[in-house]
Length: 402
Image (tube, rainbow, N blue to C red; front, side):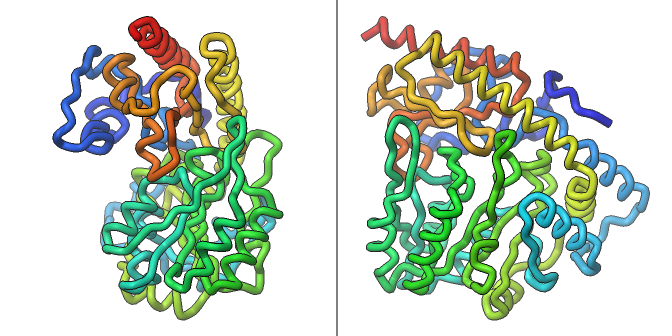
């Protein structure tokens, strides 16, 4: 089985969030939206799943599991899944971990919610680097904790960590957890080993636990390599690593994520407060993907690289003042349009109404998003080109109207 990444797959009538759920997620209930395109004509480039068919190895594993007709309560009892996943981490990153450290969650997002509750006391706070994935904030505020932010520094579209600010903020005893996104969403930075070591050293000297969200770690540009933070600190048990097959193999709906907690006390907290059940189909899909999905992933990475090159060339030609760097990882493009659009414009609403393109503006990313948009390029190239055509037209129309 192979995947035709150019195939346009109709996702209507599948309860797909990318198609059906954007208004509830992207806008408050009191925001009035005027669509100038029919709903079926909208171009979806927002939520972080792919428009491609899921990895054939995962589909084959699901089909095999379907041959057994019972889908009762399921837990990860044996070593088969661990063996498949740890073989993957050894091959991909040269990293392994103990069997007892591996816990299964229904997703990285649910894990973030659980970890805030387990790690942060009522007077303690979490810290993250901004702009940031919105659920870092949602998980913290849901539990009535404070989220503090350390803004990344940016020059010509390249983001770096303000280590002086990180040092200052983690020195506050109230800061209990750093939510690290590696590779970073939305900027696409894959932090270097030197940057990761500095993050770890600063946090550990201030007794700050690091929750390293590495869900995008397999979606690298061809030739790039991912280093798990925990690999650089083999003697530390103050790092919780979150990985998943969801982004890598387009299995977000299978509700399976890997939460690696080496610290026995923190692991006991997790086991006491989080349910141990998993989806039988999700577990089978993940195991099949890790066992047999390598070649498919390589083909996907090459296709994504092509789409990023198309995006870069289009922006250079049509919107030359846009600031964009092809990211180290992810299938998400982070584009600065401040040369064309005002800072007070809600870009999510603007492009939905004026272009019929569903995407996320910088206002969706906790803080420091500015006049930027996040575009999902994990779609057929023809879809990408149509989305870009509409985006360019909307920007040019706005320029002529003011």
